Image 1 (cartoon, helix red, strand yellow):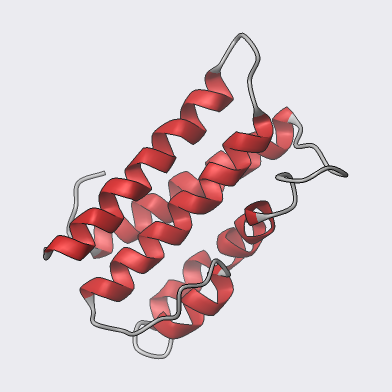
Image 2: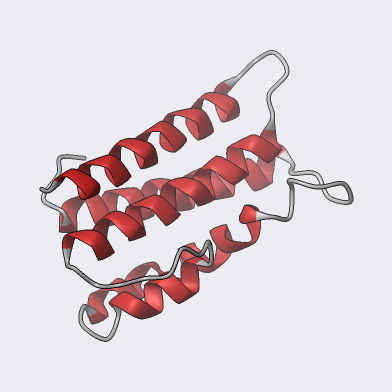
Length: 128
């Protein structure tokens, strides 16, 4: 695994741990942060895979657009499309006034993040 791929994975893992920690927090949990970091984890794993396969991508945050760069060559990634669509909204929705994530939102985001993470780590040959 080259340097940039390792960096994407490292950053994705950081988001993974923050999302997990916020969901488990007993005192003052931030479900907004859990959802945001779940989305960020998935985004960075997609970018790690794209980088690993030398597939060019723009610096964007839309998970579906990133996925659409992968599926023409790796159609089995369709398996995670619905999970990514769920996470896609968390890049912005809960970061600004007007919406607040619930514990149920955070649980759904974390569950989707874990599945996406496991799927892409397997594709990258990393242990789960």
